Image (cartoon, rainbow, N blue to C red; front, side, top):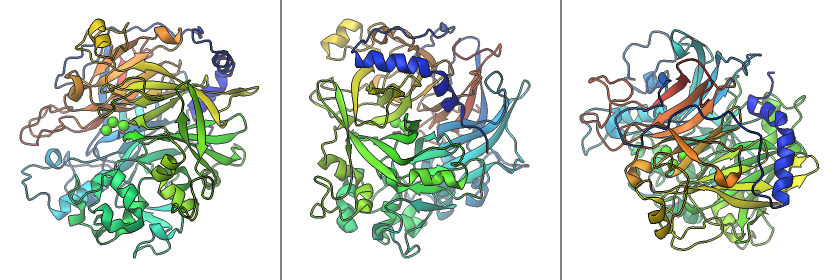
Length: 620
Ligand code: FEO
Ligand code: CA
Ligand code: CA
Ligand code: CA
């Protein structure tokens, strides 16, 4: 089996810094200078909304894979003709990206690997021409079912062609709402609340959907997060009996965004109510071995999972952070019972690590402390009388359990980034319904979001992410670039005083670290909230935290958000998904034709590779 992914190797390299950072936080020292990263080499780009992807001078972007890119040789037409054709092509609305390489010298120069891509949603009026109020045909709905999920792409770099998918590679693979069947692990495996007529034993779930962000594991697998599942199911909470409260909190309705129920009764909860409980999980995929079935790991809970960010505690226990992206929902942490042992845990054996452990939820206080409160059936308020007969009930109704133990409602928690120095960054994208300050939410209204930093207690062996206690602070505030600093302060916003108007982050969503430890953020909602382009920002974390300034690196085409930022180990390529370009417009009258600029094609969600024209490290 191959070595652990690079980020875990980097974590070892950073161990001294981790110790210093952890000690500093214990001592309450916020102005701790950290080892310097290289100074940024790029000039900020304009925030003005345009039809194109805007990068700094000296940078270029190439499409690696767009909706419809063939995974087999001889692709034919650019777009899929039907569901069977879609199953052999890259899916729609690309989101999370993970890159795996076995190249021994990848840190110096990366030229090949597997690029794993989530496909979150679809779009009726941009995927097909001539859509009327009557909606899609049955085959169009089935094509959409084949267009969500996940792609595993065998990619290679050449100086001439850039990063491209190897079209005939047997390692190219698609997973979608149509399959393959996923196994179920943990306390909800075999649970009656997951049993359907087609799967009475509740152990095999066909497909995955709503795959937003995700994560990777030390043993080289991908964790894909099922998020806004209610968009794909028709039903009312009332028809779901004891599952009604959680279903209502998900926003389930009889008029979902995608009318798949017309083509497949699985998506009609008035016919098969338990189907809803079979989604909303973290799904593990082994990108290197298609013979290993995907696994829905129920121990990690069921909610609108944005992500699954994995770190190892000093004990070797696997710690997974996952956020529930909805207004006033929570931040979760899961800690494995067993310690990761690289000599033992690879291939199918590693999957067992995510089956037994403790799910907890974050409780924040005004004083800056954070407590992880366990969600265990029979403990505290999670009683039989409260509806928690077993741990399966707890994980299926994680939101309800979390509320009962005093979880702190947050402002749409999205991605979680684990820095090798121990800090955990949590993107809170926005909450326009907040009316008062609260722990973790220092502004009375929060239309532009912020980023929390969580610092675990330090043990003698480094930051202990498995410990029950941590501290929280704000790393940075999103803001309205239309206002100057005085206006922001008068409006009660007051974030990012040192950032330029282009550099102000609006609605942070995803994040990643480059190989030198700088934080890169992407946004979702900047165009909608403040009329500026959504984009990508860089934040140098090496200086004192309270002087950190964000710089705008990219502006994405109108309607789009940038998702899934991911660096190659050499830092010379930044892969990023340009999701939903042209959102809100139609095939006939699209607001952009990114990336093809072809009058015969609609805009296509696409994974691009951003590189410096001189081949240098991205960001300088
Ligand atoms: Fe799919 Fe929370 O973004
Ligand atoms: Ca997201
Ligand atoms: Ca999105
Ligand atoms: Ca989002």
